[in-house]
Length: 115
Image (tube, rainbow, N blue to C red; front, side, top):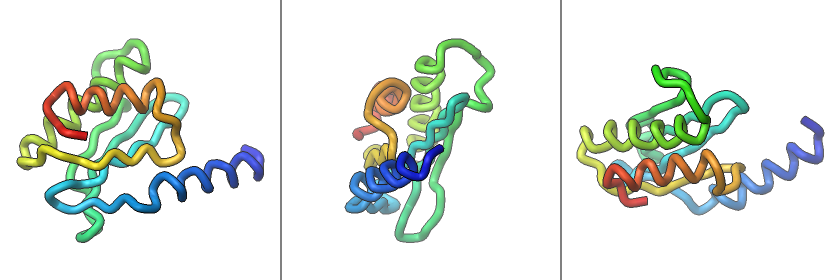
């Protein structure tokens, strides 16, 4: 990754994530997307702990990456429901809200989490 590209990504992350703050009632769902997998975690910024997490590296089903991302969103929604959390703040970080990142958000919404 070139230095200019990294600087551009960090500026985007700073702009997108600057005003987001998760609480225990409404945690921040942070997304990380690599070339192979996608990771999502719900974070309580007050206590600085991860409330729940899900990723595509542990999925048994293999297929299209966008389908795996949707399944990650559904798995995270199930984990949040067990902790009686119904609303979250969606932090896409430096990634554009398209493709796999959007699929995670739609997977959360499909299982009843308000994003």
